[in-house]
Length: 232
Image (spheres, rainbow, N blue to C red):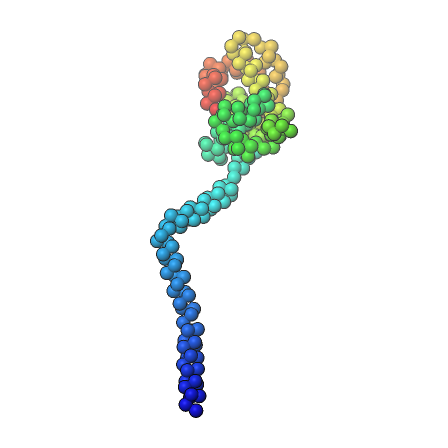
């Protein structure tokens, strides 16, 4: 009888201790995790900084992807860009023209101070990848180029919508330069009654009136320096 009572008492005490242990277990586990985490932070502060930098880097990359450059399609869209963005698009167009003349992507990019990846990003419609893995310019493109044209109001920036018309403008300027340097008008006469169509669909005639060209030239509007300042 006595042994039976002792056995019941031990069982009762064991049950109480077991229940108390179960009630304390979640709090003990939480305390252990908290102490372990604090010790880890104190022991490895650089790990936390690295994780923070990774998160910030992902956020920055995500933000930069959201701010991708949008290709301008008219003079109005071009002029609202910052000066840096205008120079960027001008140089991209010149790099493509350089590639069409035979330069490699790296050569053309380096000439105009551009990263090859930026040229590929912005001028992709004007480029194609050949079988050997190298990039070359397509026969023509529809990248906007903003070029100066002489008018009775002086030099005016014109939005040229494709490479073929940009080439025509380049040939016209060669004829103007030839006339101003030698007085010879044979090259200039080729552009009489000719015109280009700008990005807004408006015809822009080539000025071949020698009196007007002489006037603009005398005012310094057709000098190499003034043209370079506009297109560089």
